[in-house]
Length: 285
Image (cartoon, rainbow, N blue to C red):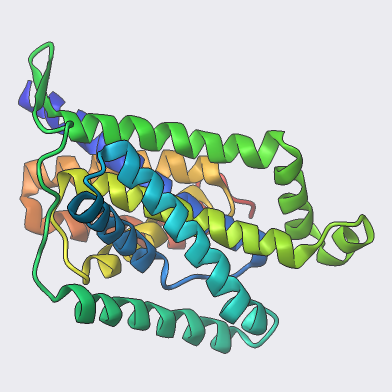
């Protein structure tokens, strides 16, 4: 029964991994652009949740929506101020721009919030739920369910809506999309907003159950890259499957080998995927 509880907990955590990784894969699929600051977006979503709780008294719904909105606006602003100027430049300038952005966001968080670990006060989701002998924190259960729903929603947005068709058209051929009356800059700004917003709400969901500090963005950034590599760059649905797999691997390896070894297993999987199937589970070869 304990092992079953470990499996369920790993899948719920993996669902949140899938949500913030879907934003990273969206940017890659749209622009062939790697965002090294993506983990910092997750970290900022956690701090937005904290500020809303402390100063506005908002609950889980309120601070999750606030994190999504704040990071959406930030994502659009970053695209307008920085990304559109380097996206057609050399790969090195793209890498250094988002790496520098990651450092700026991380050390700004150090300056504002300090290096201490923080956590949210008790919310309406505090407590434990008994599911037939499997005891799970209510916050973790709700966060995982919401994350799965939002990730599937993002996939449906891309594949079954007019906005999604325009986003994919720009990803396929920017020049042809312009001839069809689509404004690529507007679509790419929207993609950055959606990507950052997904990371922000994932951060808010993680903040319900886990303490954090400004350095947590580095960890989540690495997890996002492993997830996207396993699922396939450009595939939101692949990120969902990969996130669940990685969450499960983390939980079971921590249970069997100890928490200190779980990262070795996950990053070993990352290297194996790049070696044997570099396109990932659902990416194009």
